Image (cartoon, rainbow, N blue to C red):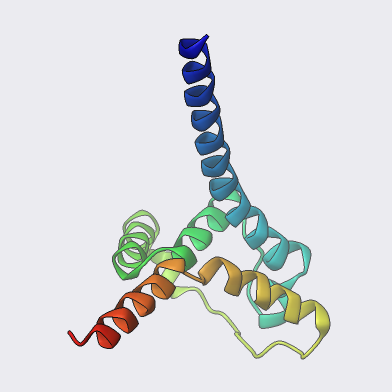
Length: 130
């Protein structure tokens, strides 16, 4: 019975990890899509709605660090350099509750938990005298 219990534990752990990975990969783009296209934040700031790949790249752009942002910018420049010549009339959105929710969702994607861990690590070093 012990081997069966270990196998069940490992299988359950693998299922949880896969579920968390899928939730992370799917949740970010879904939140971005809701904020940008459904809540119409794109129109509120004067930008166009994004398609599937635009949402994926924008979500990654918000969630990645500086190097990731640089790679995404390079990919966009290599694939479609004319994109940078597009005219946009960006403006500050109206202060509505819908726009507030959209900004909050985008900020949630852009929040990086690693920054919190960095601060805690520095704070502990400072307290210990290093």
